[in-house]
Length: 237
Image 1 (cartoon, one colour):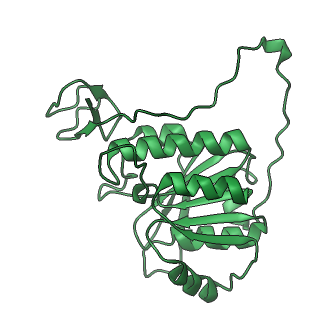
Image 2 (cartoon, helix red, strand yellow; image 1 turned 120 degrees about the vertical axis):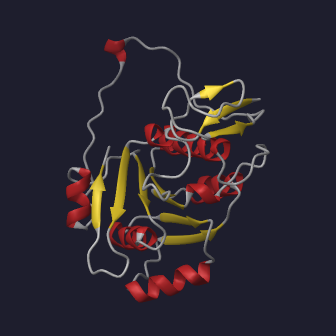
Image 3 (cartoon, one colour; image 1 turned 180 degrees about the vertical axis):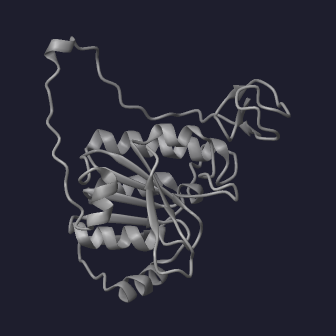
């Protein structure tokens, strides 16, 4: 058993009031490690023997989104999209799935399929390549991800899913860290593009351990007034 700072990811064998690494107060949470971890390993290989891969960015069809991404999506990349509740994260990614036109699994841990259907109708999204799933158990999500074999996986949101073998509550540091790690490794091993939605705290940062941002390839923030006409998509990594 150990304690982890939800702000910076610093691990301590005992609870402390103040993190010695980031100097924040009352950020330590108990972490219970899972007994079974899934990993993807490769044997050591000499540098000259490694085959060079040329990645071609795929345009999303949304010009401003492509601009922030530097020209489009990179294969096997993981994108973390943060923003306040109601700012339009789910709406943006649903439109993105329609624009890409590829087989997409959209998993929501917060809304039912009928709720997502209402949003889709309002946006004019009706692609047969978009599959909707309402689920919180990550093991079940991964089961259907492997069976359906989509090009893109959208998870809404990382704070709403859990691994049964970890006894801590949904949204805790342990759950968020382990779920994100497993998702990223699974997606990269299969060569799929992964979008993870993350809620933000009142301080304006993505909820959960700071290490979450280091696990992904791209970190985006969707900002603006909820009742305003415009949103700002900001890339921070």
